[in-house]
Amino acid sequence: MSVEITTLPSGLRIVTHAMREVETVSLGVWLGAGARNESEHENGISHLLEHMAFKGTTRRSARAIAEEIESAGGDLNAATSVEYTSYQARLLAEDSGMALDILSDILTDSAFDPAELEREKGVIVQEIGEAHDTPDDLVFDLFNDAAYPHQPIGRPILGTPERVASFDAPALRAYLGQHYGTPNAVVAASGALEHQRIVDEVAARFEGLPRLISTHEPAKYRGGDLRKKRKLEQTHVVIGFESASYNDPLTYAAHVFANAVGGGMSSRLFQEVRENRGLAYSIYSFHWGYADTGLFGFYAAASHRDVPELVNVSLDCMASAAQTLTHEEMQRAKAQAKVSLLTALESPAARADQIARQMLAFGRLITRAEMIAQIDALTLEDVRGAGLSALRTPPTVAVVGDAGKAPTPDKIAKRLAFL
Image 1 (cartoon, rainbow, N blue to C red):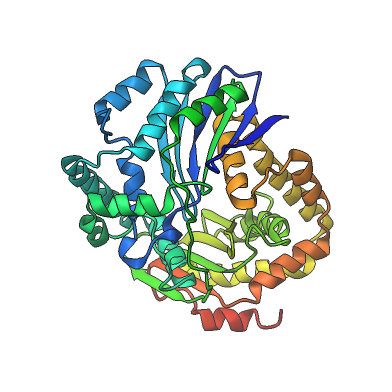
Image 2 (tube, one colour):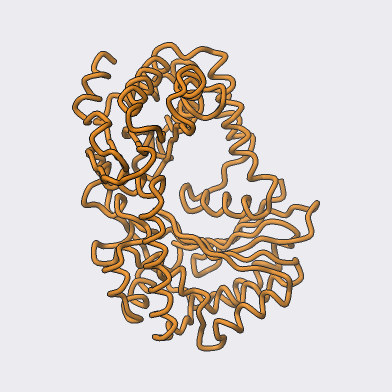
């Protein structure tokens, strides 16, 4: 694996993976700052800043940015998550310098033109409205809020219309100046590249990034219950529990347990809830790891009358798996986990994202062999234990639809009290 890492005197880290079999390069800047770095009055500003990235700098207009990158056949993208924000480009290898010049320009010299800002705030308000009109999006916003009430990690990444409307250019510059710097930033590239060339290009263009430490409020999982009554054909339900963070030794076991419970067509939830009982068309389990916490649970959408039975059957499936998961089920779930982790090695864009996040999260890269070894080393006791550990925490319930159909957290806790 042709992976190289260089740290500039400024503290900016550059990590590349040369993939000789491809002819394009995916590169970008990843910052260890996202929605959970925001104060209450800043909720949504990370996402707005990401939107404003391509809306013009003192050297380039928004149209000039688009025309320059597309004239080379490339494209630009950006993304905001709970703990990260990224600005990325994909194009031919010989144009990597141009892409890095654009990225450095937008990160160090964005204009935040008032007219562009007002237009983009309107776009985001429409995006928030779309999310609120999409029950399988809204139910997860409610779930996060119920799990981590009154905390940045539990607030919606998009923010609220009122908060978004309140932001101005000075607020954006203040947030950027507080969180966008080294060593909180990583430049990552994957594909047809030469490491030293990327290093030279970055060194010449990113001198404007300041040194700073970006912090966030520690997560405090509470569990709770949030419901939104909607007149829908189905009721959407998410029920979950606190699970392992990505820094927890249980993190791989938690992923494997989630895969075994509801990660595929052979999983217990799919087979019992959908195939045997026909209670739902869509049902799956998940495990999300953050720096200091994690969430395990399941999502399902069902007819209103079937929700009580669906929830009880699903809880029983999870509880049973935590006690009786078989070796064969674990092996299938391990195989799923391996494929999920290793798929990133096959795509330049996914690989750049993977190595950037690893550097920000762990300060080092995790090799393919290490990932496989961690999964292979898991025992039935490890995987069952990860499930038991999660199911013994206070439940979180989120519902959109017929709000009264799903049981309360207290009733769920009683159903699982024997664990």
